[in-house]
Image (cartoon, rainbow, N blue to C red; front, side, top):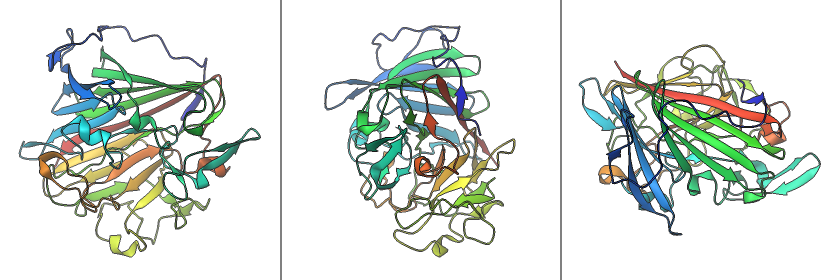
Length: 379
């Protein structure tokens, strides 16, 4: 459960190995001698910034990551019969990501999830954020980390092809204090695992809660929902929320509630009991911190399985309640309610207002670290 580790307050030296040039290359060209790593142009933002798309191949999976938003664009994985398909929601082109969408695949920050009323006080100073999810602030603001172009450094790690993406968020950006330097490294291992390592330092105390917002549908490019997916969470408690999805501050057992996923159960089995608008799951689960997978999703139709491990104390399980068909993704599929699900490793929502929650403030001289991984297999 350690996400804030004290240290020298700076990033480690670059990993030894094959250091690669970031010069412009032709679409799809492999980078140096790194097996399973290539890069192509992905277009330009409305401001004319070039966006790159990196493809990482290892084992049986292929992962594509864009520098816009440090976004996981796709994850291709085989089903039990060996048929390969993309198991995430997203778009074929950059234009889709530049438009309005619910954070498909994006790295979100500075603070993932919600901050009540878009206000907080830190070290005696008051701060005001954009209320972009009335009446609260959500996922970093109007132009969070999902709306900026990150710098990429591809390299060969001991575990497989990797790309490190970095961004420096200036003091005052979206209302947050301190110059914050962030590095997110995506690695694909030979064990069919996508590993995401996060590091950050700051020159002024700031709230920090980084996460990835990939939507999974293990059925692939399909019209089917995720309601028949079976979910297991190694989480015996959760944090209840009010009608604006802000935690009440309580930490209560899941036993006897529709939020009990301590044993495998279909997501749709009890979802009707989650009343309110728009209905479904959008809750922070308190992970028990045991070794091994802390969340497991199984699709009985395709046999695909994804197992999540994380060093974070919580995970936001979101069942795609606000998907309404307005986003048309790969294969021309309109993403409707419950078409995808998220497992967002995180510190608890609105932690800045709840002293009993794990600390989510980064201070000068400390280094934020987090590792979350998703391993794919079949049954």
